[in-house]
Length: 135
Image (cartoon, rainbow, N blue to C red; front, side, top):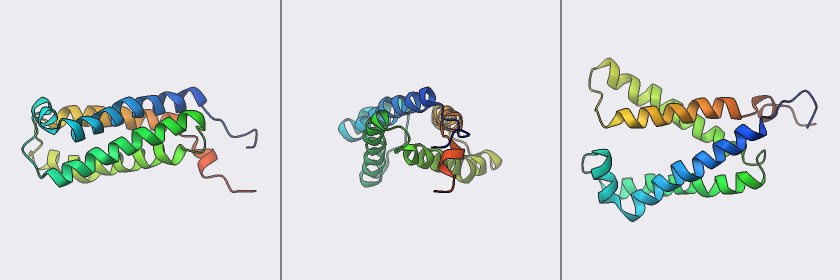
């Protein structure tokens, strides 16, 4: 790594910890106690296969973030993927719902939590490192 690339190692580790407990814990909840999660968040009853996929993906983010604690720069793509899909969710799902005044109240907590991940990932991800040319 060249000297002109700034890496905020504490932010990286903080985002991995946040993902381990936030996404990992949330995913485990969806898989282990889906009815409790639906009730707790006021979700409408949904298809169990799709909900299981979502839970599994969040658990995978949590597991990969454990590895990110050991090798923060090697696992930056985990945070980058998280930043991308959450940003796409805001633009492709939340924005249209807000424009058409169909934003469900149970989505408020998700929007707030996702926004914290987006802001944290933007601060933590060393973009100059990620997009640097290999030498």
